[in-house]
Length: 165
Image (cartoon, rainbow, N blue to C red; front, side):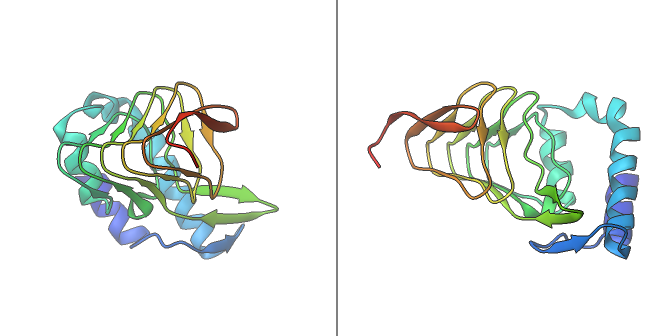
C-alpha cells in the first residue's frame, strides 16, 4: 500500500512525453525506481498472482480480465493489457528509454490474448496486437507492431510465422 501512495504523491500520472536528465521529473522518477528496487524482494511474492494485477491497477495500469503478469513495469499508467493477455517471467514492459540524456516515455500495449514469453522485452511504443506471440528472449523495438495472430522471435524480433503482412 505504501508503494501505491508514494507513486501517486511523488509522480502522479505518467504520460507519454520526454524529460531531460536532472529535471524535477527525473529526480522524482529516480526516487520511484530506487523504491521499486528496495521493495523487489517483497514484490517478488506477488509475481503471477491476482494481487499483482490489483497492484498494477492501483498504480494506474489498464489491465483486462484474466490477464497474467509476472514481468516488470515501472511507468504503470503507460501499460495496457487486454483481456487474457500475458506478460511472463522476466519480461520487461517498462515504458521508458534513455537517449542522449533524455528520459523518453511511450506506452506499451499488449492487446487481448497476446502473450510475451519469458525473458522478452516490448520496448516503449511497442504494440502486441490481438492473439500475437513474442517468443522467449525476443525484443520488440520502439514503435514496432506485432500484428494480430503473428509470432515474432529474435533480437530484434521479426515475424517468424503467422498471418501475412
